[in-house]
Length: 356
Picture (cartoon, rainbow, N blue to C red):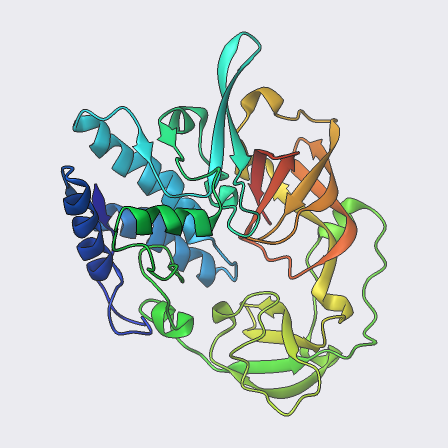
């Protein structure tokens, strides 16, 4: 079953959405395997639940993850319901992750495990699924390596055998982000300010202080150029700054959407680029394993990642009434509000939270 989620080509780098090619390939696969083929247009739901959210988050100066939202709100919600209406029992997807069924507290519980291919593990993108959604999910290639999957496709003479990996925004494709966002967000010129390497950051001791955002002013650095809108940039961004001739690269270290200022720092080791803690509010914490949910006053050690494919990092989670503070054993580069912090116990993904 194939779902179309996007029609517009504004901002796409190839002038076309990838769904047309994907549709043709999916039809060829179904024909080759001699199985029924179904098509469904979910673009209205995708625009409402994923794209509208994405625009709203960028407007606030945050960096959303539309792929996570697409899995939660579209693939394992609207799409799943459409499949069940056809009489299906499960939805099988090509995610590189694994599912395991156990009994916890006398109840049937589903565990989401990392994919066996360390270079392709996609469990991060499923971090906000519920137990109900997971109960209907199948991940038939999660135990395989990508080369093994391609070999099976070649053996079956499938047209997907040598198909390139998809890139960019889920179902939209690779985009020029500022152009894509300018469909709704206005471009407005502002100052690009470089902060010196020896900038004195506030003295911080507690997780609460470490997780608090940096507050800079243009007088803290030097104006080195202009940008087209602070809401088009994200923490840790390197490309698209329009400043060349540097021995070390420049990175976005902070944005101020209210005053429309983008702050940058030179080099991977710039002090404002790294953070040792983050905070996720109680209302934006999700436990894929509700039986393991932390209560106020509890503290646990987990391995955490703050972006897809980032190596897992040792961290301590402390739960309070307001939410969860995550303190890393080593400072992390490019912690961006709006992204997802996801925590693992061994290979199992147990919970996640939107970074504030």
